[in-house]
Length: 255
Image 1 (cartoon, one colour):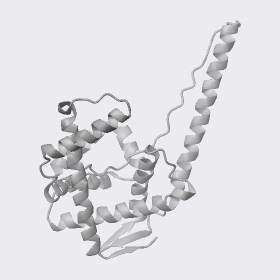
Image 2 (tube, rainbow, N blue to C red):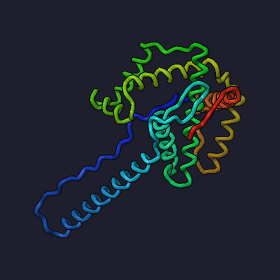
Image 3 (cartoon, one colour):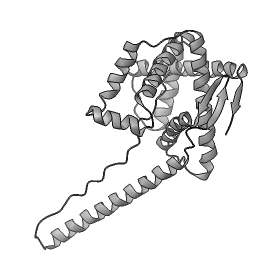
Image 4 (cartoon, rainbow, N blue to C red):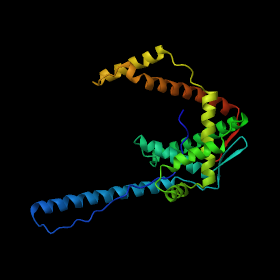
């Protein structure tokens, strides 16, 4: 099961405008200048589109202080919603969908609320079962995260731009650690049989042949197939577990 991820920052692609010098006035120079100008115009247009998209994405956010939902005795605020919203928006964009379209707006809202409800139910359940994240484990994860940035200042700026402070980030990291422990203990995938691997491989091979692609040997893809089947089984167990938690929970959606 993949760990819950939190978007630290959504950046625009930097547009670098190179200054072109030279005194050549021949046909090649003019063509070169024209090509560079067209490239610059294209970059400007792309940046403009990205800035417009960022405005649309931000417009879907809500007041950070309002109550979005109450799950049992846990109040979910607008600040929680906005963080989860960024993740849902990003997932839709990765699939080539526009999360800001009129058709997608309600879907984005419902997916965001559902993800928050599910996460809250899981965290409440694992707290009851006393799963813990040590300070040492949190620090280790935090240090790994910092390595993605060139300087401490860049990291701090990224956290600030995400709308979180350091304490909130550390809490989310601790939640990730506890959730992983919880998934591994409560929803183990179990052993994947050779028959299951062979069946999946045969389906994959048939699809590849139909698409005119070369089929790798079973030994070459066996680890990937086994991992995929384990994740699939865990996801099925998780879905069943969440449904049970929902049935026994008091959930009040406020927006």
